[in-house]
Image (cartoon, rainbow, N blue to C red; front, side, top):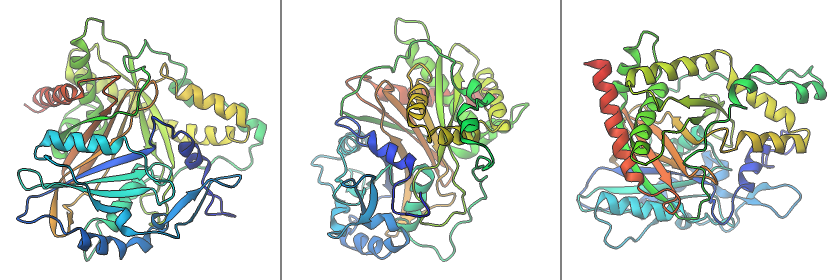
Length: 430
C-alpha cells in the first residue's frame, strides 16, 4: 500500500485482482457451522450487529475502481448491508452433503465488483437444526490472516476482552542501501532451495472450469501438537498437517494405475504482524515449497522428513528472502512477470496447502456457538486441487476444493486424510 496514496491497491493486491477470469473468482471462503437451535438465525438482527461494527474495517464499505490508470479503493456510495448479509435459499438443504453442494455453488459465483468484495450467506437450517454462514472475501481485499481479523471484528459476538494475539515475526524489509541492479541480480540461496526443482508431471496439472466441489474434514489441535512433540526433533502443527495430507494423497493417488508422482506443496507464509491494526488488510504473503514424501510408507518417517525440510527453510528465512526478491524484481516489470510465471508453474509445485490460526477460544454468532470453522480457497489453472486449514477453539477444519470436471471424487480424499491422521496418531502416541 502506498503511503502517498493509501487507497491505491498494492502491487500484490492488484496482481491478485488481475488473476480473476471467467473460471477464477478470486475469493476465499470460510464456512462457519453454528450449533442447533429451536429457531433460525435472525438475519435482520445479524445485519444490524454487523453494520454497527463495519467502521473498524474501512475496506468493508469500499469497492475497487478500475477505471483509472491503477486500481484503487473508493467508497461504495450505494452500500446496502442487505446485499452482503443475506439468507441463501437452498430448497432441500438438509444434510452435510447438501451443505457442501450449496457452498460449492457459492464458491463458483463471482462477487459483484460494483459493491464491496465480501458476503455473508446464511444457509439452513439443516435437518439437525444447525445453520451455516458461508463467508466470501476477495483475496484482493484480505489474505488468510487479515480475513480472520475481519471475522473477529465484524462477525463473532463481541467479548469484554478480546483474545490475546501472540506476537508474530514482522516482515524483514530489504536494505535501502542496495542498488536496483544489485536487488534484481541478487539470487539468494533461498531461490535455489525453493525454485528450480522440477518434479514429475503433477496429477493436478489440468485446465479448470468454473465448477467447484468441496469436501471438509477435521482434526483435533491438541493431538496434532502431541504428535509433533513426540518426535526426536519437535515437529510443528503445520508439519503434522503436511504429513497427514501426504498420507492421504498417497492413498488417494495409489488407487490409480500410475506410480506415485513426486509432489511439491507450496505452503503460503503470512508476513503480517499479529498485532497490526484492524485496517491492515491486503496481502503480505510469501511461500515455501516442500516435497511431500508420498513414496515413504512409514507415517513417522514422512513426518520427520517434512519437519527436517521446513525447519531448514525457516531457519534460513526463505519466505522473507523470496518476499524481498520478488518486490525488488517488481521494479523491472518483465523480469518480475517471468519470475512469477516460474514460481507459479505446475512443474515447480503441484498443490497449495495453507494453514491459518483462527480464534483460540470458542466464538459465537448471535449467541450461538460456532461448532466448526472451515477455510477453502479455489484451485487454479494447472493446480486443480487446493487444501486450506484453519483452527478454531482446539479443532482444525480442513477444506478441500477442486474443479470436479478436472479432478472428481474429492470426498474420497477427505476420507483418506482422516485415515492418514489416525495412522499417524496411532504410530506417534500409542
